Image (cartoon, rainbow, N blue to C red; front, top):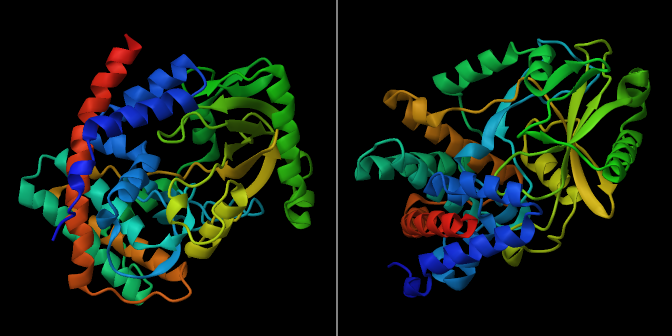
Length: 404
């Protein structure tokens, strides 16, 4: 049986609430318009940028949040775009032969609570994304079923299994990318050396915020292991800082890019990202502390990932807690819409298995889910996907009217 109170969720009201939140939280008109453009691109993009709205809907209609039991760490914002390649290495090893990993890569909204909510959000995102791939209705449902099958396997075994062909190919391509390629994509040569390329991605900071950002980065460096800090000497000298415009739901939070000397020379710099960590979107469903702070995020990713990024750390800036991580040239994502039809189901099943294995690592006890009891998650995801389809259309129209 489906939710008995789904008529309480008005898609137009959901869109109005999201627009009001965006207007309240985004500091500048330019950034607000940028976020609206990204959110209005498709229902999938609207889902990506509205995690608080997702949990508000579940609070409004609790029947949509039912499902198999099992508590532990969850990412809180699990969707198809939050998987990717990263390099789990220390700055002590710059070798190209260092392994790259493919897994969940966003824990900003992580909290300890009912892990089924992660799966519900992942399934909803799959349905919305699959609609854009030109699949028939049963093909859209089959895509979500593949994800759910993978979740059950990963949760039962704690392993995702062998990576499918498309993921292996992505890892191989990513492993060959160099630091210079990353620098060329994000910086430009000036008379003073490399600096961030000012424009849509990097915006200037005020002098006061510039000074605070440099000091905040120094605090992060001071917390690094002494061996790493001392080994690199002047590598940590800050060369440039800028406001970093990235993401969808996170647009509006304080996010600062830091370029440091690294190995020195025109192509030796390292780029770091310092991102404000607020309360998780699903805090109403959390068990225990779910407050703001990078400490929560660090605990979750270290608990849940088989190969966590070793250089992740934290700092503070003007009373705000920031997660700090080094950007690596190997970071990349799958283009699911461009995959051959024959490769799509194996990839979706693998993403589900990664999620199930992550949940198993993040729980003290992870009960196995039977397919029959987990099927309610897909049933409710179909309902939520329909709501998001309608809300996204309302949001696009409201944003246009407000901008005009």
